[in-house]
Structures are given as structure tokens and as C-alpha cells.
Length: 292
Image 1: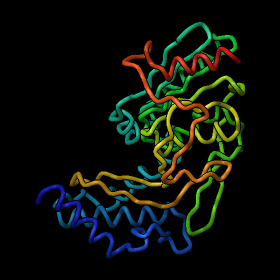
Image 2 (image 1 turned 45 degrees about the vertical axis):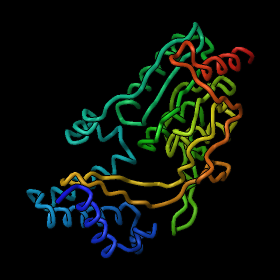
Image 3 (image 1 turned 90 degrees about the vertical axis):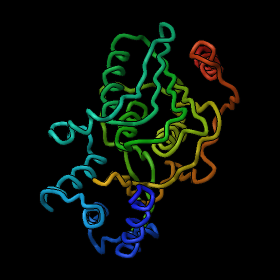
Image 4 (image 1 turned 180 degrees about the horizontal axis):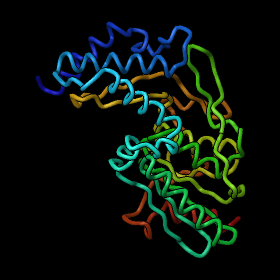
């Protein structure tokens, strides 16, 4: 059985058992969304085992692994203390890049929000805040398709006060604020940040950019973002099939809906150069930062 037909069969069987998840609805019947996800993911793994012969050593091991995967989305840093989560972090390819453009402007680029990227950013940010007087930042989120939303929240906490709304989440239970919970000793001042975005900036990258824009803590520069407003969890099963669960829709702190239209930058830039020195995004960002 090839990969495409295997994924199709898995999707059909899963849709029959969990029709509400396929419709984007909550299946928990009074429990938490995470409880419903554990149940759905467990069933998916068992379907996977039944049809594709990828049986685990025990059902409980499967359930614990799935629970760890889901919970790591909510608390990724504490999960690094476990061997299982450490193994996940080791498999993640770092995409984070940092460099000093001049004595006061720092360039950070993310192509993803992985655990290892979050830890690398924390280290770089700590060094900058200690050693650079009045730092200014260029945050490059071009072609960043998202990643782990708790990592995006941890990054946002350098710009947003604790308990500020990071984004709104809307599900069958209603609309609930997701607040900044991370506390950093040092914060970035307003007007010191330019965020680079384009049509490849999506999901968690849009949540980060949208929150900083809504609170007037930074300027968006580039092209309109992709416009992905869904809260999703993707799991790779033992057969290598990928299962994506959609549990909610999200909005920016000011209730802007990015679905389909994306975020509109404060300054539009159409072209880009071949490297960092020729990049018109960077040049425009430098003009904005040095004029403030």
C-alpha cells in the first residue's frame, strides 16, 4: 500500500469514528480539548496499527507518547527535562539565526518556532539585553510557516507584559483569550522593533507579528502574510502517515481575523536582494529604526 492510499484510508476511517473533529468541532463532551485530542490520537494510532501493521509494544506506551506530544505544545520547556522530549528536540533542525548589523541593531531570523530555536533565542536575547545599550531589533519572519505556539508566546513576552492577550481562540466552547504567561526580567521598549513578513509568514508567525502590531510595540514591513487562522496539531504516525487535527480558530488581540487575508504590513516592500547586505527589507528596516 503506497503512502497516498494509506493516508486516504486512515482519513476515511478516522472521519467515520470522529466526525466532529473532521467538522472542526469539539469531541470532548464536557472534558478539556486536550482530553479529546488524547482520545482521538489514541484511536488514530490504533487504526494505524490495525491497517499498516505498526503495532506498539503496549497501548499505554502509545497513550503516554501521545500525551507527551500534545502537552509539549503547551509547555515545551519543562518537557526538555524528560528523555522523550529531549529526543524530540534533538531531531528538530535549528532555523534560528542572529547577528549584529551594527552597534545597536540586532537581526533575528526564524524559519520555524521549534524548542531548540526558542532556547537559542533566549540565550541570544539575554546577551543582547546585557551588553547592548538601547538595542533595536529586526525580527525576520519571512517564509516562517509557524511551529510551536508556546515558543512564539515566549518570544512575544519580551515585547508584551505578562497577562496581556497574545491571541484569542474560538472553539465550540466560545471565545477565550490566550494570555502571555512567560516572565522575562528585561523587556524591549516600544518603537525599537521592525518585523519582516511576507506571503510565507503563517500561523504562529502571524500570531506573534499580529500581537506586536496590535499593541504598537513594533512595525510590520514587507508583504501581506499568508492568513492561516486555524489552531492545529499534526502528528506523524508510525506508518509515516500524517494526521492533522483542527481544534479552534484564532484572532489577534484586537480581534482581527487573518483568515484568508493575512496581516497587512505598516510598510510595503515588494522586492528583496540576494543576500542580507542587498536585502531591501533590511535596508528599509534600518531606515525606520535609525529615524526613531
